Length: 439
Image 1 (tube, helix red, strand yellow):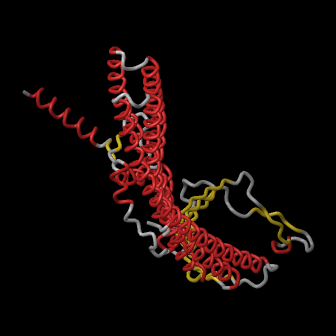
Image 2 (image 1 turned 180 degrees about the vertical axis):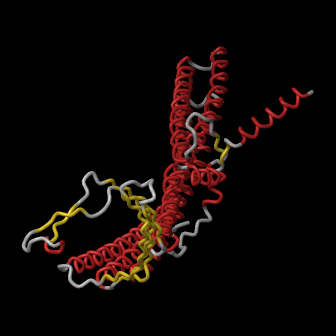
């Protein structure tokens, strides 16, 4: 019984794992936004930005440092002193040694920034940089959404085409059988059989080619999704399902530039550049004040381990004020360069805004054209279907040729393929419009 439970559990897990390999378009996009390598790389930037905030904040916090220093003098340093100090003749000097051979010092130092105008600007810039990193992730996700959508739709066209070919192949097989029977009765020619056989072989060749092309398309989809290439992936959408939603696209919807992560990122870049101008001015023209303190115990003696060695304490506190006076115009040049960075960032934002407007207008035109094309192609398909049906009836009644039937069948297949292509272009146009609008 225990083994039976294990088998049931294993089968359940397998079915759950297999179910996870089926994706709608929305599920494929969500999977890509979570697993695409470019998104994961961009997310590392957020972690890096968090550490930069901590690093910048640490500049304004007290720092404590301890140290131990040991010195052994092979030769004790000396100094010359006037000999008359010790009762010697005037004008002569004596060489005296000062100090002991061993010196062991242990120290503790504390430093703290009291005032620096650029500190708070730098801290705010670090926080803004985190927003910039977050927007980079959003940009990466938008790119993934675009790529996954295009790759997913590309796989659908092969399935739809294969379905049409299969339907036509079955019709031809049935027609070939009927023609073969007529040939046996003397009511059809060998030429009719050969023409139908050739058409059937051509459809078989197209089916095999479609399978290989679909495999390539599926590999591309797996890649942009971040899905393992060696695992099976099944798509559950059809062109018909998606097209039903495709006609609801808001062609005249107003463009909101802030819906674009790239535009928001460029705006944040301007803010960062402006903060850099402020920081360069503060670093070059404002003083800064720091406090410091240290305490040290120094053990000195010719032998550190006898009673003659003594500990000598030292303690000091102080303030350090740095006032910039003249730097040879270096800071002025840095400020001007920072201002140029601001101007460049503004121009990049404006250029991107114009490119988005152009993309939206072109996408609207393509969408309207795609909708009209679908309508026209469906009318042509209906006409081709009527012609094929009529030609087929005439052929069976013996008043039409196999050549006319194959021509009608070819025209029907062409219009069926045109409908698939038109639906594909409609979905692509809808996707491009929504992406251009920042959805």
